[in-house]
Length: 321
Image 1 (tube, one colour):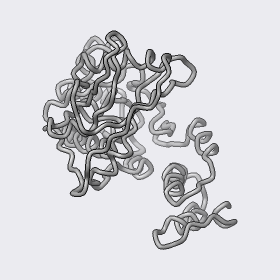
Image 2: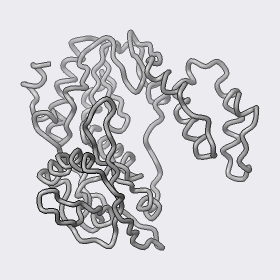
Image 3: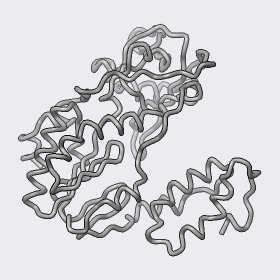
């Protein structure tokens, strides 16, 4: 790994910090015609949680990803404790903002369909997880105010508002906007490297090649391209030039793929849906498994019936099966 870090320093978040997509124009967020500013006060936050997210807020302020503002809009932060530790991360509740923003057609690919494009002859793999990916896409100044939230600086005790200058986590259109931006930026790489396959699922990249030599060459070229474009990969999560990797919950080896144990556990622990929306989410997750479930379409048919708009919500024995 040292070779890749030293040779392509601009490609790594651990060295180059948060990136900014050099060729992407700032995103303008379109509000619905009837949209009015939503103001939700900050929920009470424990001293431990505030102390836990403060370093993250300060880091984002220093990087210019957050900035002070005065806005008629305000939605709350929800400090989320990371599993197995004492660290917190700030998560903004943008549900009310999302309701007031125009939808765009989602173009993020289905993982099952995406992996069907992987040639069985390509048995050397590199996976890259782009770190803080949404933060590499700038928000137009005219759209920044709708993402404001309250923040009390622990040093001064002075309350105020901050907002995002980049695409925020929790914004409903961020995955599609980022997916399309990166896909367009990597188009020239794909055209100039037609002997390898490059798959993209939002911020997760998989490069597959027929040989180790081709994989190493293409991986270096990809890292060089990402650094120049302004994207940053996580060195901690990178899997470089291997014959066995994990990608999107699948284990890939020798041109074949199967579910990881972690993905199986995730699916088995899914709760019973209580609404049509939750059924759609359930089907989206179990769609990962259709390759390994004989007669998946027939088994899932009652569930798809339950998601139809004009069908009253009902959960019976057919759905439970």
